Image (tube, rainbow, N blue to C red; front, side):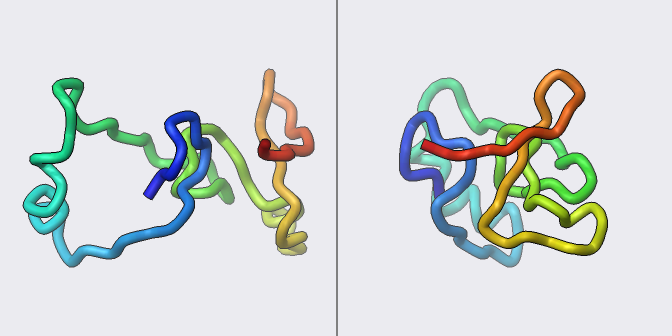
Length: 82
């Protein structure tokens, strides 16, 4: 669930057994633009983010939980959400 219109990562998750179950619960709440499909993330990146964001160090097996980095112009830099 994305709690802000400009959210980059989700705030919390719902879990469904099938995509059909998701559509059953949510289709009537989706506006005329329809569903926004998110591509598969880059390796080690967050699955719930619209942008390439990952936990720092995760790619080398030393995750620094709580510290994020974002890919900008082909380089990873510290990411501090608003």
